[in-house]
Amino acid sequence: MDNLDEKPAQALKKIIKNNRRKLRRLHRSRQQLQQQNRDMWQNRQDMIGEDTELRRANQELQQETQKLRKELQDIHHGQRQDQEATREYLKLQEEHQKLHSKHQDLQCEHNGTLQHLAGVQEATEKLKSKLKRAKLQYKEDTRTLDDESRHWRSRYAFLVHRIISPYAHMSKLKYDDTDLSSMDLVLKPLQKDILRGETSRKEFSTLKAQMQASQREAHSLQELVDELQKEMLAQVQKVQAVPDEQFAQNFRAIIGHVKSLSRSVHTGSGSGMFQVLHSGVLLLNTSECHWIVKQNQKYYIEAWIWSVMLEHIFATPFAIFGVASSAFGKSWMWLYGEKFEGARPLPSASCELYRRTVLEEMVRLAGRDTILSGQEDAHILDSERARRLAEGALQWREKVANTIGTQLAIISSTVDFSQISHIVNRSFALALEMSSQRCRLQITYPAIGAAFHSGSMSSIPDLGGKDTHGGDVAFIINPGLTKWGDAHGQYLDQRYDIVPSLVQLQPPKPCASGKDCQERNLT
Image (tube, rainbow, N blue to C red; front, side, top):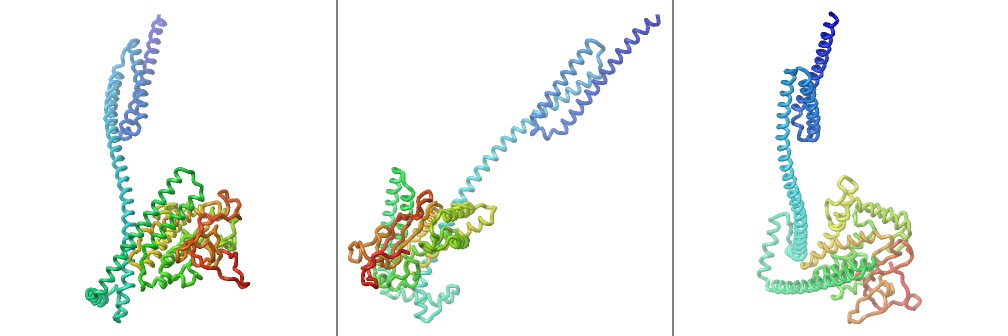
């Protein structure tokens, strides 16, 4: 009987033990849920960036909730329902609903923040675009102001050199433009003399008429150059041009700008042109008797402008970088010698490879736009070598422009300064392209007194208007462009004159043997 009573008691104890085990599991699950909810509450500020993780946590929570529901249903159907566990479950469910509601609110705020951020980014892009346009406009305005400033400085230098200084010297006065009293002492009597001088007014009227005539001539020449460029561009578009034709076109464009600039320079009898423009490689060894002829003085100015470019831009393949590149040019000549035309190395595969490799690296550091258009921020910004090369190129561009503009302004008040920027830009671009080729390209010119050669020279008519087809070089107007080798850097011993030099001829002089020399070397 006792055994019969013990079996239900043991079964009851076993049931109670199982129920307690299940309750403990439920209690542990409840604690885990509470801990998760506390973590979710503490991390509510990070829910915007962790939306995906929150959804995954919500899914896991729902799965756990479903498991709890199933277990509670099993307990409800099989055993007495645990009221305490039900209340805890309801509390957890309520907290879960609150967290879900807060999550939706944060999601709305997140969407609003994204929309606001998109608006801010759009406004920022507009401001950046506006700032970029403003910078470009500022650079253009600065360049215009620099041109105008250079123009008026040259006009002032012309007035001081031609009028004020001679008047002060004649009046035994000292003119100092940094001292107002000195300026008044010279300018006031000068003003009175100008107002009283009928002769001065007539000379001014004549000068004004001559200036207008020169401007009209320069304008017509510019129109002619533009038409020629358009015609050549149209031909390039129709026919696939070879590199030599492109080089010829670019070189002739520079010739046109130099010619237009020289024709805008009107010099009077007392301008002192030969004292101001007294040096230049194309003017060396030229007899003065050619230049005293009024008709030839425009050619003198052309030759002087070309001399400035030969000495500054085309002196070596690296000359476009100015003082910063002088060591590279010296190293090139030291390694390969100076036994070729223009005291340059003899063309060879290794020589041209060295020249091209060094130049390409210099251009990569300094930036092509620095050389071609004078852009100040085109170089590699975090490199000191790039900064020095870029500054050298910019300073050299400015020096060439100032040298040409300042000297011409001293002898004339009618200089067309707009041509100078075209000359500088095109010359630097041509020098860069010449030095980047596999073949050898050089600016060449004959020696004074050399025999005429139709392949490398072309001549202008003599003073009587007759074409000359033989004789010796009397003076040089502009140099030519010559190539050695082909596009692949082969046949470097073969010469081809892309554009011949333009010269004036004179009757040949007899040699010591009494016979005319048929051949003379070119420099």
